[in-house]
Image 1: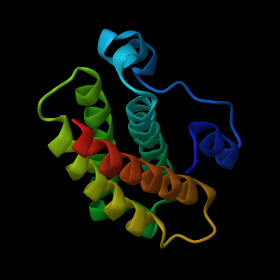
Image 2 (image 1 turned 90 degrees about the horizontal axis):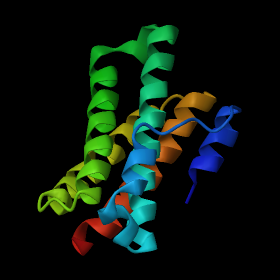
Image 3 (image 1 turned 60 degrees about the horizontal axis):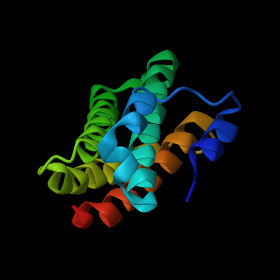
Image 4 (image 1 turned 180 degrees about the vertical axis):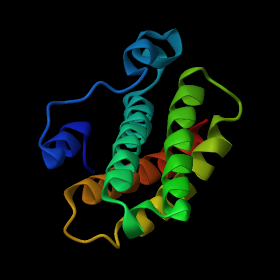
Length: 143
């Protein structure tokens, strides 16, 4: 599976700050979670970041990249990934079901973004979505 570091290498930038990860990692719930669940939370938040960057990329590119349906799908994925990570950390009773929904959204986003062959940002989104979907499917039942 690709890590955030791999994602950053693919994008050729310094490691971005994942929105809210610093605060989440300080949460008592996060520090008490096993490493697999912590890794899943990081995958969710890294995917949300990759999707946000991909939306900006698609809107700059225009044309087929910026179709309403496509941008809406990536936005849904962004929001579901961020919310999944947050609900897992706070120990929500809804996190398991949301993880499964997040995995479905990530898989749909991955399929859509994969049609843009040869585009590094789209490839980064595909990788992040694939990683997050696998993590959510794995950790969702653990809650």
